[in-house]
Each structure stands twice: as structure tokens, then as C-alpha cells.
Figure 1 (cartoon, protein in one colour):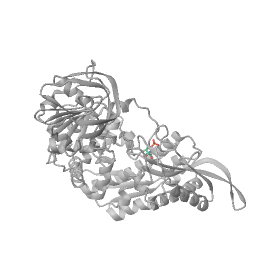
Figure 2 (cartoon, helix red, strand yellow):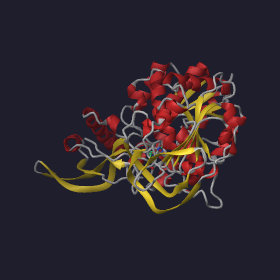
Figure 3 (cartoon, rainbow, N blue to C red):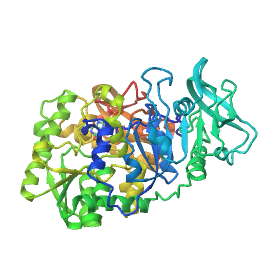
Figure 4 (cartoon, rainbow, N blue to C red):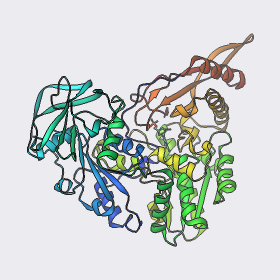
Amino acid sequence: MIENPPNDDSSSRVSTSDDIEVGTYLEIAQADRAQGSNSSIDERMKTIVILDFGSQYSRLIARRVREANTYCELVPHDAGPEILEDQDVVGIILSGGPNSVYEDDAPMAPTWVYDAGVPILGICYGMQLIAHQLGGTVARGTEREYGHAVLHKDGQDNILFDGLENEVPVWMSHGDKIEELPPGFKSMAYTENSPLAVMGNENGTYFGIQFHPEVAHTPQGSEILRNFVFGVCGAPGDWTPANFVNDAVARIKEQVGDGKVICALSGGVDSTVAAALIHRAIGDRLTCIFVDNGLMRKGEADRVQNVFASQLGVNLIFVDGTERFLHALKDVTDPEVKRKCIGAEFIKIFEEVAIDIGEVDYLAQGTLYPDVIESTSADSKASHKIKTHHNVGGLPEHMDLKLVEPLRYMFKDEVRKAGAELGLTPQSVNRQPFPGPGLAIRIMGEVTPEKLEILRNVDWIVIDEIKNDGLYDKLWQSFAVLTNTKTVGVMGDQRTYQYVVAIRAVTSDDAMTADWARLPYDTLARISNRIVNEVDEVNRVVLDITSKPPGTIEWE
Ligand code: XMP
């Protein structure tokens, strides 16, 4: 079976990610609030606020809290107190971060955090901040503590460790340590290298933990976070699929009013669920546009038409752009140019259709919460663009449409749950991601109708066998790549000279990092046999065993 190490980095680059590149997420969060995007939603959500001090694990904390059916928002460490008005904040978590609290320009928790009158949990740097800001002492440790450690409870009962054994395996990653507790705090647990690994104040409202409960290497970390969220903060655990559908529908109604919305469908989960939510909110004032770029998988275009027009009853405009895309791709071999050609053609077609529809006010976009965080976090600004992503949301500014982003506060798994709640089939909501430029970026060299046909047939076999062996839902993606290489083979008594295809299957949480999947040999054998037997133009199958990094998931 597939046995890959857990993937702790939860930063995200899913299908709609690269389009928002402006501003810090402080600005975006403030802009959201200025527009009053939450204000008339009757019930303010009971919310845990996570202040992001720059840890690579910050968004994992958010995911874990959401997994505990509790709404949370990850905000920059210097966010203002507005969120206290917008939401019913029941607790605050201070994330880890790369700084040392005693450095001159180290980020501090703003005073409103301590004035809010709600419980606080500091994780790693967050713990050191609580110690530092409330009168304790933090110093450089003699040794960095990194990796596995065993936490020993200090004897007394501790709500944070409710239900846990006396010894708890945890994951550490810190250089500094707390030397002196702030007044009113006591030590609650220690590890071999950290005499003060957990602290709490006497009235049981502020806690600091030196380890990372959010990563998979702290196996009971989710329970510890749940103890904080439920036991300490008293959160009701009401962030259920039904509620996040209601919440999204209420936000859409409020934002769109009597306006009209267009939504470009890609066939993927995000645009499907976004459209279904908007349809639930505003019915016929939504028009969906599906452009078949001729670069889809076998049967995909029919499937999308069927789901939207027949199952959901959504206004759907279907455009067969195959000829135009293939024409635009003629003689193009450079991967970046390919992507740009596809993007440009898509925009042209979309504009033409939009003009035909007449007056429209909003454009729907399937931006996810990790995209919002990713596109605006400090390190994403410095990060290099690896590939140009063509996405259905990357549409021209001059169309002057306002954006409606119903998935803006959801993680991918919540999107899938929302889809199921809206009545979409498991087949629609559990689909593996598929890139906007489609098979074009899985064909090395020029994209031709012949190569597309070969890859469609190969891809069909791969997915078929992966599904037959019950692996589809366990993999982030599984697909075939048509290389530009031909090799010699022998079939019967005949010498063959045909294409090499590569099988790519990865596990991942979010596509930012990925590991190649250890597919069972029997599955691989069946895939390989079927491909060379059923697809004449292929005589060799190889397996891609590269993780990301250093590889990317797609080949170009
Ligand atoms: P890479 O290849 O960058 O892919 O590791 C990460 C994830 O993004 C998908 N991908 C794309 N999605 N337009 C998309 O909508 C694109 O141009 C594109 N390129 C890659 C890829 O399938 C994987 O899930």
C-alpha cells in the first residue's frame, strides 16, 4: 500500500492560487472587513483567531482547528482588533515563528490580544512571547531542540492534556527557551531538554507549549488542540458542513444582492462547488461558462455538461474551443509559452461569451482559504514563480467585474464536504486536481491531436487501474505523461519504435510539497501491461520517483 511520510507543510498551491498577488493579507483582511463582508450575517461565528508569526506550520494550526469543527481565521501577527467585532472570538492562538523574542525587531503580540478577555494558547515562539510579554524571561538555549521528544506531565491535572497518558510524544523545533516563568504561571510539563515545555496561568486561561501540536509528528497534537478549543475556550464545534454552506450562501446573498454572476467552470472541484453554492444563493442569476479547450481527459467535457445542466439545473453555456486552442498551440514547444497561449485563448473566448450574455456584475472565482493566506503571506512575496498557472479565475481586469469568492474561507477538505452537503456526487467532489492547461502540460513538446488521443487513452487506463485498486482517493494526483522520446521494443516478432510514457502518482496535503506514491507493484504491472497492449503508439512505461521538491508534480 501507499506508505508515505506525513506531509507537514500545509501551504497550498491548488488550482486557483496564483491569481491574487496584491497586498498583504492584512490589507486583504482589512479590505474584507471594510466591505462589511461579514457584518449582516446574523450569527457571528464563534471563532478562534490564530496570529501568524511566520511559522511554516501556521496554516496547519488553522486546519487542525477547522478539523475540530471550529471556525478559525489565520491573521497576520500585526492585525488590528477588528476581528473581535466581526466575529465572536472565543480564543486566540499565537503561532510559532522564526524570530527570537529578545531581538530588537521581533514581532510582539498586539495588546488587544491580552485585553480581549479570552483564553490564549502560545505555540513555540507564541509561548515565548507570552512569557516575554507577561514578565518572564526567555534566553537562547545552549542547544537547539529539533525533532522528537517525550513530554512528561508535571503531575497535576491539566485540561490541555485531558485524556492523554503521562508521557506524550511531541515534535520540537526551537532554539530559545523560557528561563523564568511570568508571574502567576506554573510549569506543567517538561522534556529532557526543556525543563519548561508547557506552562499555564493559575486560572487556566493562558497556556504556552514549546512543541508543535499541529504537525503529524505529534500524534496526539490534535487532541491537545481540541482540549484547548473545547475544554478551555468552550467552542461549540458548530463549523459543520451544513453551517459552512449556510455561511457561504449568506455571504454570497449579501454581497451579490440583485446582481448577476458569471462563473467559468474548469470541471474541477473548486469551480464546481463555487458554482453550486452561488446557484443555491441566487439561482438563475448565475450563468456558468464551460470552455472545452480540447485538452481535457476522455469524457470530461460530457461529464461537466451533465453535472451542471442535468444534475444541478444551472444555466450553462458550453463552448467547444478545441480547434482554436489547438491552432494557438501549433508549433509551440516551450512550456511557459504553452501555458500563456492557453491562458490567452481562454480569456478571448470567455470575453466573447461574456459580451453575448449582456450585463453582468460579478465574476465567481474558486479562491480557497489557503490561496488567500499563501498569496499574501510574507514569504510568498519573496518566493519565486515556478510555473505560470493558467486558471479559470485569471481574467482580464478591463472586464470590470467584481469578484465573488464563495470558497474564500474554506480549506480544500471543507470544499469537498460542502459539495457533498449541496448534493454533488462523490465522483464530483472527490476528484483529483487537474491543471487548467490540461493534457497540454503532460505532453512534452508540441501538442497535436494525435498525441492528445494517445495520452487520453493512456490516462484512462491509469485512472481505471488506480480506481480498481481503491487507490484513487488516497492519492493527491495520479496520471500519465507522454514523453517526447521514442524507444525500441519488441512485440511478437516485430521490432517497435514507439513513445515512452511516464506514470506520475503523488501523495500530498496541498501540492506545495509532495512525495511520489509507493504504488503496489501489482497495480503498476497491470497499468504497464494494459498500456503497451491497448495503446499501439506506446511501447515503454516508466515510473517517476521524484518528490516535490526538487521535482514539480506536473512535468512542465
Ligand atoms: P506543480 O506542477 O507546480 O503543480 O507541482 C502543483 C499543483 O498545481 C497543479 N497545476 C496547475 N493547476 N493550472 C492549474 O490550474 C496550471 O497551470 C497548473 N500547473 C500545475 C498541478 O496539477 C498540481 O496539482
